[in-house]
Image (tube, rainbow, N blue to C red; front, side):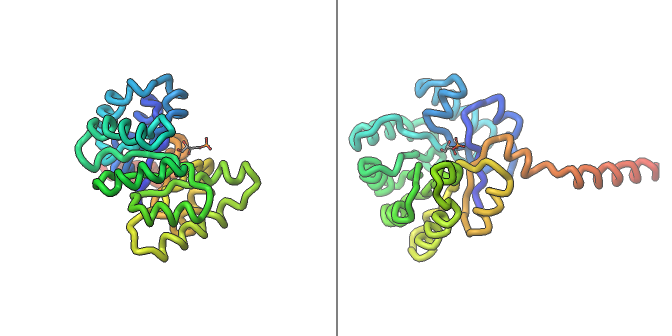
Length: 218
Ligand code: E4P
């Protein structure tokens, strides 16, 4: 299972990293903008995250035509060792073509902003590492996001491809548990939600008692 953090905000990410549970960090132009960063800041961002021992950084292209995406991807891939940089590409007609070419060259690709079950099938057909559906945004649009994601998962399980669903736009602990129950093999969540998943007060309370008992023995 791959647990990723969905943020470009180094202050927020620093509260979570390094941690062995975190497989990677996913970004996109919106997250960069929110963090006050530009595409030009990506080299420093990627370097910092790799220093914080994430196994992969997912960086999104910022253009819409297939050939432009491929050119931009070449620059992104050069920011890290092979396999450490996953190129995120919106699952548009043009994006699918660009991602197919990158996957053919052995570059890990995430097709993002996936809404429909057939897009997950296409991601598998084209050899993508991940297909990223946006649960919260589907629900915002009045769709039954969990049912859509269950269908995507079924398409992937029915294919021989190693493509994983990387569910994004997760806004609550319950949403995470729901998509994990559907069989999703990766999620990407904001740092604040990571804290909710990893820090459980009853566990801390039990630890406090253990520590007090250990001290009482001294
Ligand atoms: C994914 O790439 C997006 O950053 C993100 O998951 C969207 O989340 P939101 O719909 O809660 O903004």
